[in-house]
Image (cartoon, one colour):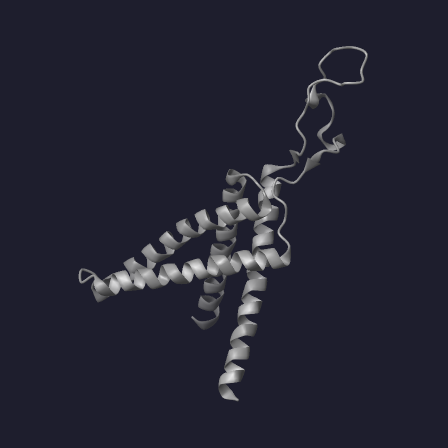
Length: 176
């Protein structure tokens, strides 16, 4: 009964972690959409085909809010797609930590005093690698541009860093 309960608790905690990660990803995409602003979904032709005059029309002559063809730059991921994206990102980070651990253990030049250096290197490498992979996943799965996906990935990691800093500050204030 004990191992089965541990397995069920592990799966439940993984599900909660994926759900929270999907919510953070959705918040990052929403924040990126606010920064980018609405974009045109259809290409502007430049002339009105049923107009009697052959003059070109200016797309910026109308108010931006009056245009029906403006949508968010990055579609917000549904919960299932967000959870799948976070699962892929989590497996990448686990593999990266394992590879870094193997490299550190097999390299004799790292001493016990260098643990902080290895930790910082691991976090920076994980953030850069994670941003590239998350941007690729968002570009492929949501059908957005690479530069917008990079912005959403940056906001995702920024939200995580801010949440962790707040949690560490709260723990420091409470426990001294």
